[in-house]
Image (tube, rainbow, N blue to C red; front, side, top):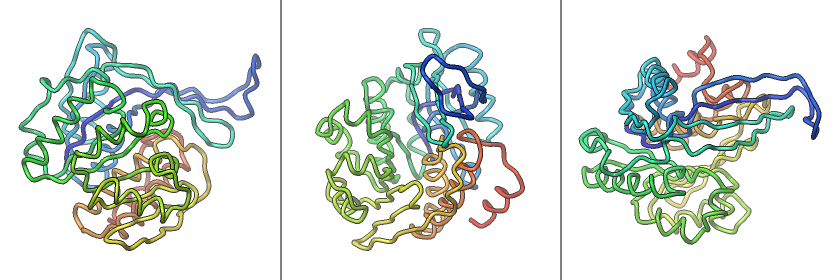
Amino acid sequence: MCVLGDFAWDVLIRTNSELKKGGDTFGEVMLTPGGSAANVAVWASRSGTATSFVGKVGGDRFGQLAQENLDHEHVDAYLVATDAHLTGSVAVFVDHTGERSMVSGRGADFYLLASELPKSIIAESNHLHLTAWSFFTDPPRSAARTAAKIAKAAGATLSFDPGSFQMIEQMGVAPFLACTQDLGVDIFLPNFEEGQILTGLSEPGEIAQRLTVLYPGALVVLKLDADGSYVHQNGIGTHIPPATNNLVDATGAGDSFAGSFLAHVLEHDSAVEAARFATRISAWVIERIGARPEADARLTALLSQR
């Protein structure tokens, strides 16, 4: 599969107590690899799927480190380097309860152009994954839409993660739908808040049903955080319970779910089993810090269950 979109470095700040205005506290400050699309690519690769990544980085040391990181994760990276913009970065604030908030800078990943796409890499992939972070501004919207057309013309399937309920609100639901509904989405991977914003509904089953109308024919997998996930396919809905509620850091949980889900479903063609697998992987992630914690024996065991 091929994933197109953002690679960014997360400056992760985790507090051990409530952060008060004007106050000071101890915590953890870490620089970790991230970016929603890159996270999905890494988790698909960790789950055993041959994965390529297309994105844009700065011609700086952090861009070089991005290449090294994806090489380390066995992701075949096609990174366009530019001296006009810095490699993307995101400030990630994780509070003492494990919930996270992010402030995204406009790095090089926001300036990927259609003319810079490696068309052969996209056309040769069986599946293309896109995230909404490639649609909130143009560029890189035109590049993402062009990639979707190339992939679909070559017979590939397409998955899409709507990315951020707050950014959808700022863009407007109608404009967001206007530039994503015609992509030919086969697998739609929203979280509850994104589904709620897009449909105006509040019950998971109703949200998923409505999304199959907005994105006709799509398999809808609704990520429900502490409540697990909800799979809606061919008119049938299935709730997948959570594998843990021991939340340490929610950063990248949805991306790990998406990457491992896609790896499983593309191989085994069972959305429910893929969601169960992905739920176990994302549970491992939220019990640790960062979007891509280093693998341990437990993760290796979980991945072997694919």
